[in-house]
Structures are given as C-alpha cells and as structure tokens.
Length: 231
Ligand SMILES: Nc1ncnc2c1ncn2[C@@H]1O[C@H](COP(=O)(O)OP(=O)(O)OP(=O)(O)O)[C@@H](O)[C@H]1O
Ligand SMILES: [Mg+2]
Image (tube, rainbow, N blue to C red):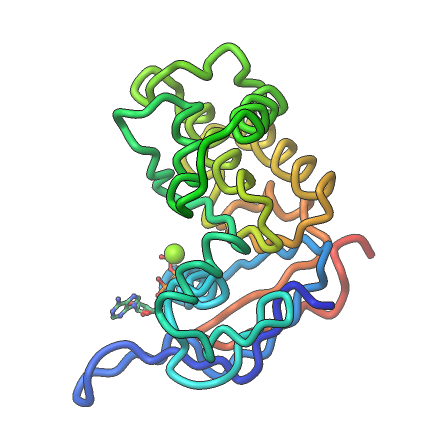
C-alpha cells in the first residue's frame, strides 16, 4: 500500500478577490518505503504540499490518502488523532519546546495523545537519542544544544510515535555543509532502517543524493523528473 496518494489535490489560499493556487491539482504517490525529495523555487508550494500531505491543512479539493485512509473524510478530532499517530514532522524552524530537555521533547509527543509516559516510552526516547548521537545530551535544554543537535532532536521527535509518513521541510538550511550531510545521513538511516516513507523538501543540492526519487514543483504543479536519482 502507498504511504501517500494525492489525487488532484488542490489548495487555494485567500479570499475571492485575492486567491493563490498553491497546489494545482497535484497527483503524487509515495511508496511505503520511499524517500522522496521535493524541490522547487521559493513560493512554489513545497511547504503547502507537506502540510496537506500531513493533514495539517485540508485541501480545497481533491483526494489525500495516507496509508490508505482518506484524510479529507475525517472530522477535526479524528484528523488530529490521525496526524499524531501516523505522521512525523520536522519543520525548518525546529520548534522544540524551550523549557523541556531533549528527552522531554521526545516524550511530550506521547503525552499529546493522552498516553502515559511509561517505561517503554522512556526507553524508546533514550534509544532514539542514542542513535542520533545525543545520548549524552538527553538532559540538555534546546538553548544548550547546537543547531545540528536541535535538528537531530526534532528528527527523534518526528520518529517517536512510529509514524508511517515522515515530512521534513528544509532539514539542512540552517546547517553548514558537513553538519547538513551528517543530519541527512542520520535521517536516511533512521527512515530506511524503519521502512518508513518520507518526503524531504530542500533547496540544497547536496541533499538530492539522499533520496530515492526527486520531484520538482513549480507554481503548484508537479514535474516528475524523467529518471530516478539512482539511475
Ligand atoms: N497561509 C497562507 N495564506 C495565503 N497564501 C499563502 C499562505 N501560505 C502560503 N501562501 C502562498 O502559497 C504559495 C506557496 O507557498 P509555500 O509556503 O507552499 O511555498 P514554498 O515552496 O514552501 O516556498 P519556500 O521555498 O519559500 O518555503 C506562495 O505563493 C505563498 O505566498
Ligand atoms: Mg516552504
């Protein structure tokens, strides 16, 4: 089953007199273990595509299926639950909770769901932090971490609930090239190791090699590149 199937997904922002068509009837399928790289100019609709794919925004029209579930059929409450259980986000701005430690930033996504933070959750958080090279930083606040370390905490948080789809917006833009490579290597290892699907938005040419496939979006329209990256 595909991790994501978008069919004629359309997103129009604004009111009648000033409308922006951010997604123009997009068709996109992402296989359940595929790592897709999404590129395109500023304002072309990349972040909008991620937010629609991840059920943060409803499309204006069209169909969006995540793991076979048509998310446009869900009411707000079901949508929030679905998002929490199925989707992991890594935003460009990282968005860690500033007064929680690295470890607590992972555990808090369990609590969002009303689940207890039990020994299993703690073990999982510690294992993820270890895998991400942050075993000795688990007790640090975000302000006590470097940019790359914060980015890695955000990756751990996105994986904490075992999502079927991970959506990543500009993971390396704030990082120098060596750190950017490191973060991408980690991301790929974590995603591939779990057989999870991912869409990664980037402006960064160095990130392209990490994907299985690349698509370009221009003015809300997808242009699939003729050959896969691995070809
Ligand atoms: N909340 C909003 N209200 C109105 N227009 C919006 C809103 N969010 C985005 N847009 C518009 O929709 C279009 C697509 O925006 P989007 O953020 O998806 O682009 P992007 O490809 O992520 O750009 P960037 O590379 O600069 O992050 C742009 O024209 C933008 O101005
Ligand atoms: Mg964007």
